[in-house]
Length: 308
Image: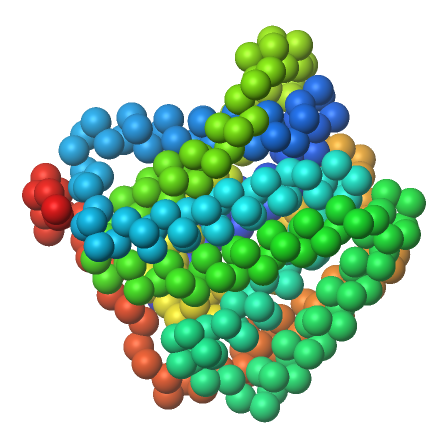
């Protein structure tokens, strides 16, 4: 990866790793999962609304709107609603271990969607990763046993993998900031279903919970998603996404310090197995002779020109 990609991935990892503890803090502090995810993405959407006032976010082409909307619903709505409800009973560190399976799903999807060829090692790595996911799932509960909510977190991992792969072709026509703004706005719309009772819950939740939710909206959502889109536009989907194997390590450490919450031994063991598989995919799993990264369209080329 080049320096631009490395910097973008670093920003993404730091913020995304803190999001798991931030979600848990919001839930502990009085928010329901639905109201939490709504406040989070109203905050993220507001960031992009303010940025759009500079004139640097162009309207999307009409032909791209259906694809953008679907990607926003999969990568934002499904991912974050599932994760917020999942963390009701799944500890933050354990949730991060399950999300760490995303690179294996991403590599598998990219092999078919983007023709990124996997080596034999890559296929073995994916198989090992899935074995680790099974172990994490079985030990996902607060007391170390199975909790059905872990399946919601696993759904988040699958949805974000689809999002990583299928957003990439759009980066040939839009900047990372533009695309992330579109996804965020479309992804926030289904969350308006949680609007009833929202104002009352904001009024009664603790200040720590509210600020935690606003933080994960502005930084892990808005800023980190832009950084991730930049990274994805300058590197191959399967290789860039493999950097996420560091995410659970950081997330477990942050959750432990912030919440005093640590995953169970079975989940940690499963996470270690899954990460071995993910690292194998990232380092040796794809054919380096595959197509070059998709170039990103710089915003400066036509910052004020409508695309309709």
